[in-house]
Length: 167
Image 1 (tube, rainbow, N blue to C red):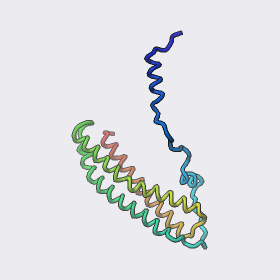
Image 2: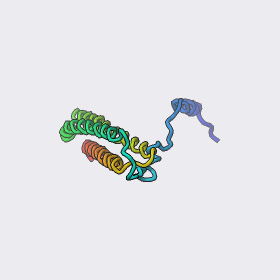
Image 3: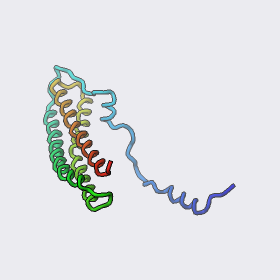
């Protein structure tokens, strides 16, 4: 039987300590994921009163998404010509295009955050009980609209990346 070399044992001992100590984030589903897992969590009760402040909150999420969309549109307009003119991988023009795509991804963050925050807000509202028909409409339309913008932005970033990689 062959024994392990001292070098292999030393490497194994050193590598066993590579994980950073401390608390790790839970892999359990987040509250919004749990609430949405069963489908549309919002229950409508036509005679329920409109919730105070709900329309203002939804408007704030929409404004944040709108600002994110504006920043994204500016960044992608600047990135497209750089990507279309990019040379081979590692060239100066390719690096400039990569940086432009990174700026597009950074600009996309505001819309993604607004969509995620709205999802969380809607899940929290669902936990409070049935909503009025008007509140339901407001929330679902905002979820669809802002989620659609975030998805279109991701698709545009994916197309830029694919174009830049030559695929």
